[in-house]
View 1 (tube, helix red, strand yellow):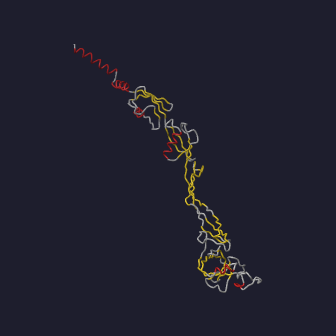
View 2 (spheres, one colour):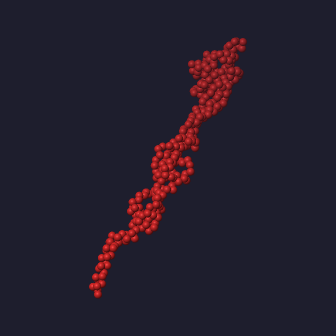
View 3 (cartoon, helix red, strand yellow):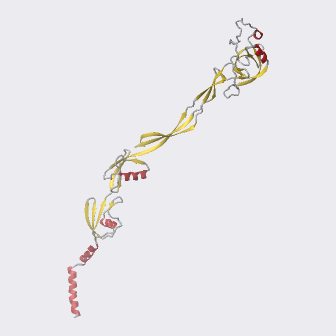
Length: 343
């Protein structure tokens, strides 16, 4: 009985081999293990049966290239399953033109806005960029985006500050004379200007700061108001002289006893220099003090060396006085004589 069953089973096995070849059986088994994948790529739809386990494996097995800027509907690490639909939006290629230069090609992910791209470019170049338009617009293939660079710099200019001349009217200087007591000095001021360039062209400039580096020094000009014979304080800061001498002093009048002239003499009261006598006219040795020299005689006042005398030799000085009694009281004494600066 068993032998009979074996004889029947053998023809059945041979029949199965004839009707279903081994390759066909393998194909059926492999097809059952494949995943049906629908790919949406650039408006086109493609169907695949893929044995891969992941989305990335699908692209590899199907021989479909993609870049990091392509937008894929699924993570490349996601598991593949039968009936999955995958969509891919290809990277957007566009052009950037900076300051009117040659456009440069770039690629971004779909949906990227101009603002996103400007920020990225600024991070790369560390240069501020300006876009004149709606920067929330999404970039499309072939777009040309024109940008302008924004730069600024600070310009520091040092200029001179003028000084003032302060006029000091003083009787410590004889009338008609001036003396520059303090020389003026220019100051310095730093002016900082911010300059903005857009697209390499100066757009604006604005003074943003000033700083005085050196203060100017005002000049002080002493202008004399003192008349001949007027007294002053030789210790005053605006009293000026270039030489100080100690002299033996006497006093004289225009009278006959001093000059040998009477009032009816045409030369009465006329000095050797031709000036008429008055308080402040003094006689000197012209070899020591030239005629016309302006003086200050301590205790007497401002004076002019305008006369001479036969007894006035060397460091002697004779002071004119109107009253003979004043001259007699003055007598003979040693006094300080200051030879004043020339105008």
